[in-house]
Length: 256
Image (cartoon, rainbow, N blue to C red):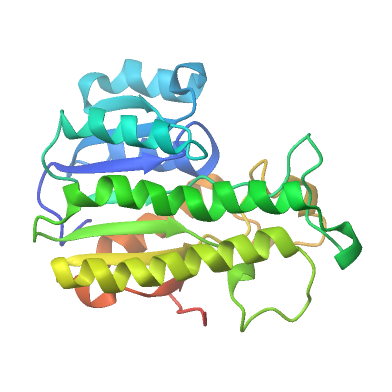
């Protein structure tokens, strides 16, 4: 499946406790070409799904605690991983936040914008993946094929924004996209075999999208199994020349 990766390649999935991240870990572990899978979340021990996979796959799955909103936690996690592996072939930033039970919710109008919500969205959706890339990219500059993929969203496209609203989430994803594009340029100078990309999963039946599914046609609401598979199929075909792309679930490029 992963035709550009070596046999028994190593993958790190950031945001692996549930949803698309957890399903991606499961599918990678079931792929014969995958060697070691490193799964990170704030508290992986509290994820029943990760614990079940750990019981099933043993030492092929390594659980690492990492809070993407905490720079020190990211640095500590990177140090722990670097003591265990010398090369990383896939770094996949999956974590994202759109709403919570503390007052964060997509804004319908300008009057709904709140400074603390803007800060939280930027910290998780934009700053987190950037700091994770900074901490782990040294393990990816080995010259062999590798992929750094950031889970973005079509609503982060400035060109595609025709509805307005959702200020915090749109802007944070747009910032993440700019970080991704910048990483593709800088890291591309250091390894021509590294592809740095942004991915749009489509609307997926997860907690993140649950409050906003009412108007989504049934054929456009994907299961986590389908989304994880579709995006892994894209990742599996990426080469260094694909770096800097913003790619939808169907393989089409999205305008920035």
